[in-house]
Length: 411
Image (cartoon, rainbow, N blue to C red; front, side, top):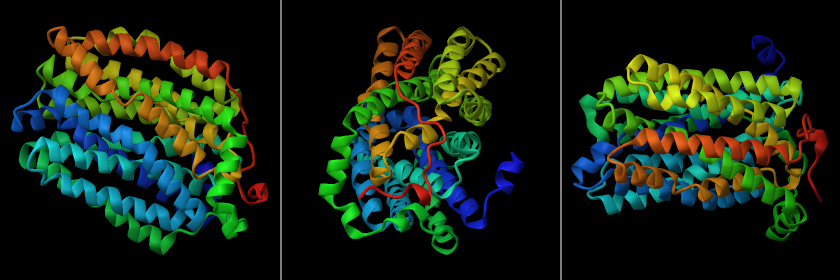
């Protein structure tokens, strides 16, 4: 691991860490809402399912943000748009703390989704266009696990701060990512690949649309692939804290502790499978992780004690995020350079949109079965795990494709 970092230049390290931190803090803000579903529903005297519509709205507006911020990043550069993006989602997170009713909060979660939607594509383009091709699988795994680091941070804050500050205080804490902009402003350089082809006509709407049309079959496949991936992650994560609290009666502190263990497994899995994909290929590593998640379902969903649920969560997320760790490299390698800030992020977020009702759907099924969250969680993971294997098997691969300056940009 240290050798991978030693081979990077200073600008490459700073670009990577800025992208990793941006995605981590974006996810941190997203999961604050996930952890607070029950307390928000109690304050506004409504069901968890109604509040979970905020998850749907966040996911539904992410493709719009990916398209808007991605286009701006093609036109004006990755670095300035990433800063605007981080300021935007931090401001909306702060405003969420003062929502007077559920309707206002849901509108704010939609706006948060718009801002969140741009961060992954812009940040991944900045990092992967700056890094060398060698070791990309490792860095892809670590970059994607920024999502897990954000979940882990939210778990820690929920475990130790929620009882003191409540859900509104959690959202105020969630505004802290805005400080990252200072680091990017001072220490991070623009993507060399973007600078190598930064003539204005490259980012025209006509040029971008032409490139998207030329690669439409690849784009369509990536949307389908990301729909499976998003069902895999959101289906295993978003309702799990509610499952621990509602079905097992665990306190916020115990729930947070289990989530911490779960996310340590996710972090280890993402880095491990990302590095493994350098040896066995992106597709094989994804399919291996998805297949190995299936035997973990009984331990993850049907254990009775906190210790065994933590073990099940660790193993499940090791596999789920193991598969996810390969995504940044895989999507960027399959995307043409002229739309690399748009196509991977837009495909990612359209996949999110396709599965945006996962949280409310799972909550509704659980409530209709007397609060049995284990039932719907286990079925969700079994179905989407198998679907991910099949869709990955029939797709293309472009391992170690050149993404940096020498790859240029489409004219």
